[in-house]
Length: 256
Image (tube, rainbow, N blue to C red):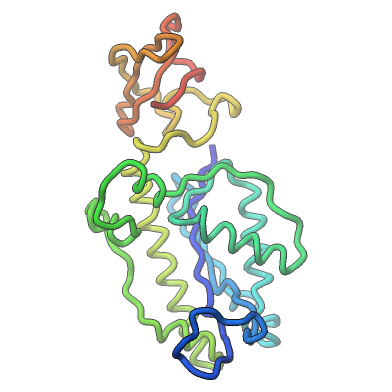
């Protein structure tokens, strides 16, 4: 199973308004341009290399229009096509719809349905934390924290010019740290993830979350209509179940 952790950084939205006060709603005609994806970073679970892409990686396109993210969007779209599962933080409500929006804008073919794990949703559904932000989760779980950057970084990129090039490179560095943190948080939360994907479809056995064959039988799980044998993975600590008449752990089980 190929599991992809990914994250994007997007631009500010330039608008033209008469004043700051009483601007709870801004008319679409006040927009000076569309938002775009500045950069993106990703890593395949189990691999060491973090990959990145930014608007700087197509120099000819960047010189013509520093806000043209087509190269970034095309790269991300091709990348998603290789993934069995994508992992993100608030990605179900932001990153993924944002990428879909840019795919639509550039007239590219839409992505197929892809299974996803949103660590924000996992944290919110299973715990009563003071915050579900990625930075807080990293600190709470003692696995790291986000790099601190100021609002000026986004403004510098939006304004363009030579200073924007340096700012974009700094944004990529910020983005890369998010991937490192996201993966660590995901691995801590993985025992609480309901499911990733049916590994049976990929010919895989073992724990439905991490694929490990180091599992222990731990009693029975009584559902409404049948009884299952309960197992706990000794690698990721997640729980799952199998029919009681199955003597060995096969891929016909469900996460608890």
